[in-house]
Length: 80
Image (cartoon, rainbow, N blue to C red):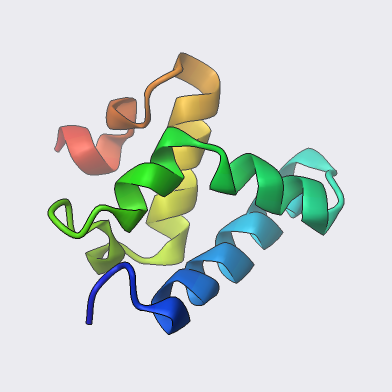
């Protein structure tokens, strides 16, 4: 399975955007746009990085780190 597999990306789109919407009180479409426009999303879609090995909760944490610091690489999941 690769990150660019449509089913895989749809799964992350659904779960991460729902977490963004719930945490930040955005509607789901806004949350999806924020996620898809992020560096976190670009990293997830990069097959070489294999971020899909992390679950949606970890990818959400990367997005949160990006939102707070400007860089998803500041997430404890990637710094460990």
